[in-house]
Length: 283
Length: 167
Image (cartoon, rainbow over all chains, first blue to last red; front, side, top):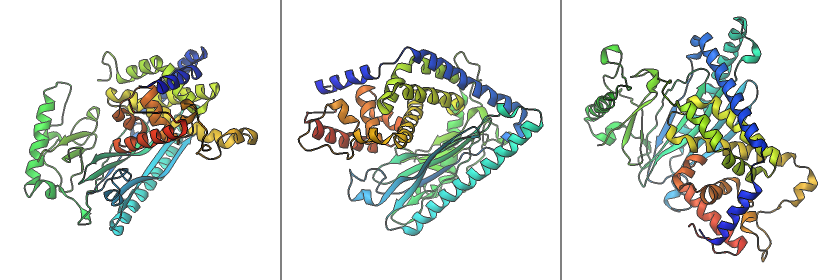
């Protein structure tokens, strides 16, 4: 680090030197945060049924060969596929804590596909936000009717965001997540896999060959066996509704290595405490 | 299972208390005002704690929180900017590019970058974060972070007339 940076850093540190009151401010914020969290737990006890309907989902698009955000670095390839934020807003009031960062896909040469994906992302997120709103209103009414103080009701917390999972010369894979937290979080996953050249969605069969079901199943079973060695990691047995086989429309995304990663929702193959489960399939 | 010795939530509380000075400095660098920076830090902490159940991996605790903190800082900055009285606003650079020949101090020059570029520069050089961490903290991918970093360094070099390398 050269001298200019050292000087700038010194200014950064001195101008932003924390005042003594920071200690108090942080302590009181921690208390407020804890209160908000506790009241959510109280809600959880009285509203288990209503709280079960939370949604979080993942949209996923795998495209090749250009990748988003690399537009500057790869002038030619960068034009082919791009993901950008189309909508970003925050609602922060007594009833809502909503953060939305909604992505859109730009796929030159495949306008139909691009539109279909974008319309799907948009309408899915909008529908979920509307539903969440209605559900929160009902939950709130039920809470008050059953003797809860309205003032104690915690706001609904919704986060819409996206994350790019894989970017190499061949694929682009990103997840869109909508997480609604009312009491606990439930996760639902949707997947879109696109072959840019062919202008259609990629399937596990394309990636793993005709035996893709067996290959993926073997990877999932091996993953479950491996993780089950840890006594804290518990999966449902096949008889209890645990993992038997992947679905024909199994959701997955591509990781950095370009390998498919099978996604399972919370509760799908294991108790909720295990959260969402992922298994990489190495072809 | 939540009742392990140090639950993720407890780790978060500890981290929030121990890192408060860093959080304050970063918030201050955006809002440039003591009370506003305190507000931002408080808001971020409350938000983080009330959402702490969404934090599954404590390995990402730091970047997870910085993401909230940056969002709050930038939102505050944007909100505040609209409310700034007219005379004060005039003192701000009307155009992002300073006059030719004008030489800025590096610290002041950073303020002329876009909000996202400021984040990359500050996290990289003042908070010593790795590029991958910056990517997580800003919610951008690694390539975006790299290109923001290089673009910012280019602008800063131009505005300060100093040799600035990424080291």
